[in-house]
Each structure stands twice: as structure tokens, then as C-alpha cells.
Image 1 (tube, rainbow, N blue to C red):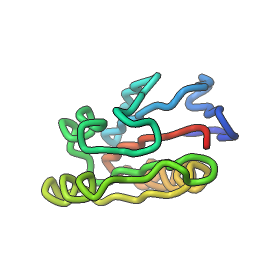
Image 2: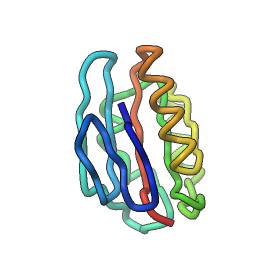
Image 3: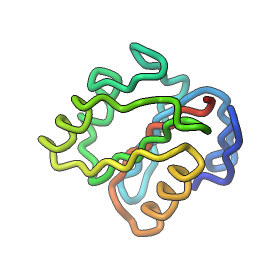
Image 4: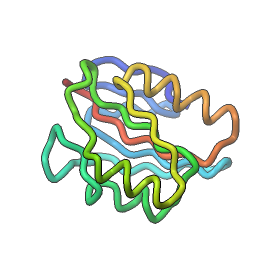
Length: 117
């Protein structure tokens, strides 16, 4: 579970992350991709989510930053739709809450979190 989020800092299962990250959850186990970076820092593109596409979650929760600065390309929505993945793009505080809610529901999910801006 995500225990807390504040600008530039996310605590997940007792470990603190200060760089963007992807978290995959298959209903039982977590896989973390720390130090996640995008081709263009504040613009999420299809190429930035290769681990997510391979994982094929039911939901992709995108944390767009504390102030929602990171934008999501239409290509990301198209790719997700083609794989049957539902996207929820929210500011990172709201995204962490949504991610935890989906964990509790036992969904197969991916979270891609931008921790600043």
C-alpha cells in the first residue's frame, strides 16, 4: 500500500521513493520500477509505459504530479484502449488514493507516479 505522498516523496510498503516510479500489482504481489523517467519529462507517451503494456493490468492509474503538470498523450489512451486497460489520470495525491482503493479491491493494476510538479 502507498502509505503517504507529499511533493517529491512517496512511501510504499515502508520504503521511501524520491523519484518517479511505476508499481505493478497482480492481486497478490508488487513489482516496483524505481527511478522511472519519460522520453519527455512532463509528457507521458506510449513508449514510456512498456512495462505496463507487457503486464496488461485492468487499470492504469497515472499520477500526473502534485499540480497535474504532466500531460498524458492521446496515444497512451489509444494503446490502453486497444489492450482493454482503463486509465485514471489524476494529480498524484488523488492517484495514490485511487491506487490504494484498487489494491483493496484486488484488481490487477499499474500505477505510474510523477512525484513533483
